[in-house]
Length: 346
Image (cartoon, rainbow, N blue to C red; front, top):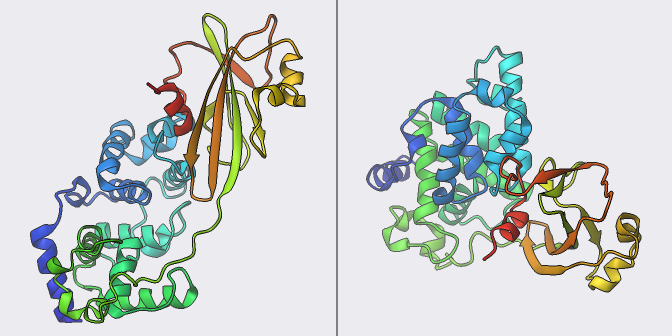
């Protein structure tokens, strides 16, 4: 293991990317980077990282901010529950720990939204605690390196990968080691077309030696996505438009959107006008001036197919739970990427 560890360290020293969170020891900033990078590529995540820290440079500023402000900075990144969890964790640290960021894996696991991966990453990088990080990149490297034949995500597979990751861990410099293995997975041992010719572990890799690179790690069968049909009602007069905040435990909780009618199958405009939701809002007299879409938005377990119906506001119209916002002043309100795509359409 020592020889493999040394090869990884030497490769990382030469090939690592100059990323801003690698030049710091501040656990707050490292934590922010790890949460952001869980769901996006480094190139895209870099912009969000700088934007987030510019608005919330420390724990206190994040803890005392309004939720809508946090979601606005997170806008377009997806997985908005992670942003809410970050703020909840910041409040916990500020009020329960007097603003002192936890220094151990065990204490970090008490933070809302922090799981084994994030706790291991932050504790090892910021505080040099010997914890082995296992993310998707590490999982792939370990699976190929040791020829692990269990499907990722199962108990047997996770236990084996975690054990091998710990056996490989550099106890003296766990933070750089973890970043090195993740970097190897990101740049060389990629999901498809890995650059084995540049890999420092080529002659140690079971998958390479057995010509099984394309086979490992074993693939999970993709789950079936739930399909949902969103009919957004863009109701406006000459000066303002109606929007409301999504509530309940559903996608985009806390974000703002236009009034919505959801159906379980595609509806024509005529069929939509006959629904009880439409009739309760407008009666039978109001017609859509224009229909835009469909827009298709793919989430991990759902597929949203949305249309936007442009309507003039009827006389004396009131919509409970929504408010009128002047045209051109939507910017402070966090919106789902689907609606941003509609607004920014060419």
